Length: 475
Image (cartoon, rainbow, N blue to C red; front, side, top):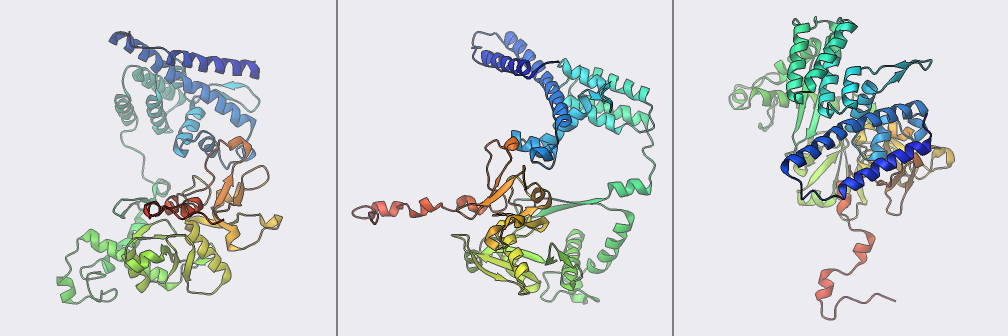
């Protein structure tokens, strides 16, 4: 057993060894000698993750994310070491597969992938090899016995020691195909597991890609919708008076030059508007299910610029104006220079709803730094002071926070406050405090370009060019 002093001394020696190598000059090395040094460094970089696996496993056995002020191990790693959540998840998954384990009574257990772990400890496989090996072993059919499974891992690791990740993947794919050439037997459980609809990121031109894997039952629903609303002549936005029910005229059919994909897009748009206008969607986080858009007075007056929905979608101002004229929505207008609220156009005069609407318009989404959850997925959080501690439910003391982030605020966890610029600051607990930013500007990127109070008060370049220079400061 090593005490903390030994561990710290060994890590310090490792860092000193790195600094010593980094301080050397490589100008006198031949090409062959440079390649030899690079080989050694590559082997070392393949070995280093092994230490991380062991330490992560120890950390997980010693404490919990909640005790550290986070909602998950992924967040602990992402916040403390400023890595992406996906990278944190990859490291956690790799540690769970390659670190030694223990039984409930403390007896040692081999890693889930013992051959891969041994190869990594000797620097024989790199990160990409490990990812391919883990994916391949996960795809082996459950009916394969443990002895065969272990032999497959050993064979694939042996292959990885002499080929790159691409060739390793090809070998793994062929091996799994030979194990189960017919593929899994179709069943309702598997179809239910694979169902889904996914929105991609908004593209530079404003378009959003939607991909779906629909069950037969779900497609039957859309089949009926498309048969009616996507027929030629139906729901055509190019018509002065689009036909959205009944049968289109022959003239509307003849003038319809849209593709099938475009007609189906317009059919979904019409069906969605009908559902929103019907009022049958109920409420979401205390508000009627409707479209919420924020924009600036300057953009409305100039007919240029953009609006942003409560879900984070950016749309041209002409689309905002067009939508406002034909749909039930909430439109919050701000001053583009100062960010202050100018007006709120709403359907009902209910104070709590008005507060929530202004928070959606002001914050745009979760105010915790690093969180990209849009406003539609957030709750109202007492930012200046918790309700239990006498905090007030005033709009300037409230903020938006997603459910998971809202729950990490409390004794021993995160704290929030409203600073002098009326921004919500999130202060991490000591275990997660790495000096990171306190304010989330992701949902309101225009804040990055607002001048600070000092910049607004400072003399401008035009002042310097005036005869006599800038005005002297008043005493």
